[in-house]
Amino acid sequence: MSNLSGDLSQTPEFATPDHWQNGRFFNPGAPAHSFAQFLRWILHRERGAWRRWIESPHDVSSAGVPLERVYGAEMRLTFVNHATFLLQSEGLNIVTDPVWSQRVSPVSFAGPERHRAPGIAFDHLPPIDLIVLSHSHYDHLDLATLRRLNARFRPEICCPLGVGRMLRRAGFETIHELDWGQSKPWRGKRLHCVRAQHFSARTPFDRNRTLWSGWVVGFDAGPVYFAGDTGFGPFFPQIAQQFSPIRLALLPIGAYRPEWFMGPIHMTPEGAVEVHRILAPRVSVATHYGTFSLADDGETEPTERLSAVLAANPPGNPFLVLEHGVGKNIPMLDEADSAANIT
Image (cartoon, rainbow, N blue to C red; front, side):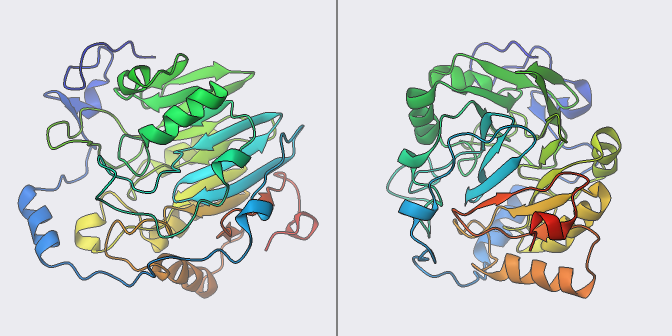
């Protein structure tokens, strides 16, 4: 675990050399975008269609009230929005990349704005034991939400290298800050920080000063893999080899257009299905779509494209798109689909 001090531009003391160079993290073997490529995208954008506001098919105030706790080997997953999930099992409540703010931006009056309400109202959250953070982008690390969670629940929080400094300033006391390949015991489980292919930035001056990652939570009844934000990379077979059999994988499917620009950092639905096949989890669930317009794919394009890929060549195990705010029981590793009511 790292022990970081100073501002975000300073070198982490325990950064691993193979993805840290000249004061910045990088993706081994993956191309980095140039500013010219960024300008080309911005100047020639072809945005897909989004409704200004997406009404939920159910009443979030009632359907979106989760259980207080889920005990034993049972596991329940509720999709809140974007990359935010409530994961409940073995008496523990975990949230991933929590975002309840109206915008994912450094300012409250501009930047990407949500197109739908969170699937769980903040006041309906059960006690949160752990927050899992994948990286520092505003649509994944929302300081306003983190401060609210900390004030109400005082949860522990895990994050990749460099992010802990920001969290300490936000008032968090118990921070598990790890590098790729590191792990740490937590309440009888184990938290594993695993490689992802992405980047980090919160200002024009701190690009890649902090690390990005996926996470594996080692539950007794089977590990859960949260991919965070990632492009398709050569590290997925290693994750499969180390953690199989995986009970649940949360895989991103959105913000991939234009693919020539987004490809290295955001998976397409086809890429997510390929990762599903590599990992062979009991169940995969789609993330990173349907709330914020961050790239050029339209509101429904990621899920429609995922459905088409799955229909054309169905995988052995389910890859689900969850309805916002409705909890889903995740089957045991040896439980049949029919017994688990998986659809």
